Length: 166
Image (tube, helix red, strand yellow):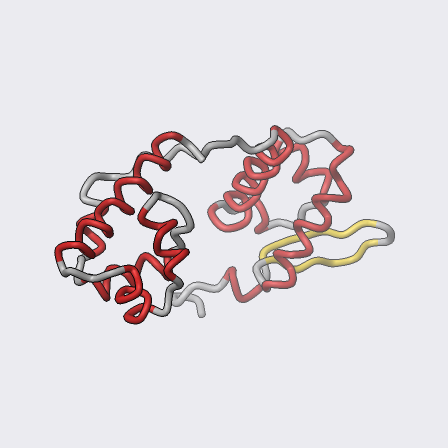
């Protein structure tokens, strides 16, 4: 857990404890209102064990609007990074989606090798791309024709039609 997240959870726990005390509720009282054990409530008040479900139960039971906890924007920076292989897969999938959904590349039949060349991807990935392209076929965006030991992929007929030529 990042230091920022720990500080935020500590602050949330303190806010819940302060509100509980303002209402003169004991931990047992809040437990009876929420169904959350006193041990878990104690942990939440100390900045631990907070789930979204418990957060919402406590907000509701202690009459605190959730927005009070999140008036400032949350800084988006995950504590870990994705591996280079995963980053490459995501980049390739974005490029492939661009070709399939937002270009006319597949208006003419294309072999996997042509797709790899267009995306500047090594030919050793051809099996993986066959799987990717098959997924577009399953959803109906692309279709293919088998020619011996290779397939040619193109936009499905219904994706080529527009309201004007219907």
